[in-house]
Image 1 (cartoon, rainbow, N blue to C red):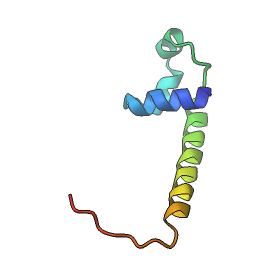
Image 2: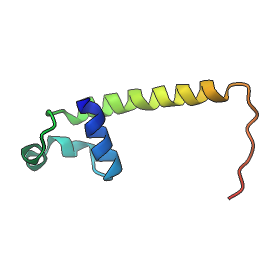
Image 3: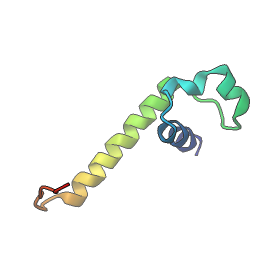
Image 4: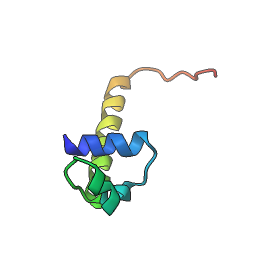
Length: 68
């Protein structure tokens, strides 16, 4: 759960990935420590899983242009 919480905080607040390693951040959070490199690897895995899910969902369906 820690990885999700870190990703949620960093993505939703538009923070840098390395903010999880800053002493002040670690001082004021109850989340377990995590390294930016680990967070980046896991974020990449989440991205790949989401892309695969989207690809599977839309497989064989025509793609239409959306007007904005």
